[in-house]
Image 1 (spheres, rainbow, N blue to C red):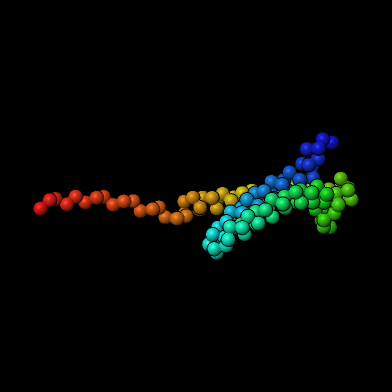
Image 2: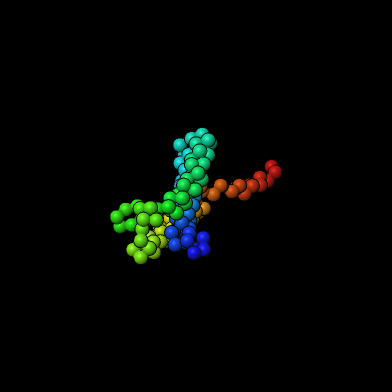
Amino acid sequence: MPFFAELKRRNVVRVGIAYMVAGWLLAQVGEFAAGHFGAPGWVLKIFVLFLVLGLPLVLVFAWAFELTPEGLKLEKHVDREKSITMQTGRKLDFIIIVVMGIALMYMVADKFVGEPAAPTAAEPTIVPPP
């Protein structure tokens, strides 16, 4: 079986996409929270670093394990005829769509509901000479 087809079958691609979308959303919320709580700049950098370092771990776990009705099992211990990766993939698709919807709402709120527009300069008044 080709490598990319195996990645898709094991839902590694979907898990990676879901993690990246959720990580981006968490980074945006973290930036907002750090700004409002006056956290130093290194706090957000460490938070994003942990998000980035978590991606390879999540992909390795998605490759090695499969979610079954009995719980998490090593992929090699799951019979392919009894595998529920298709149902799990559909759930991951739903999670991706929901998180992307939340991210879209956040972007729209940040763009249009954010800070009020700066006041424009008032029209200069011309005072006639005496």
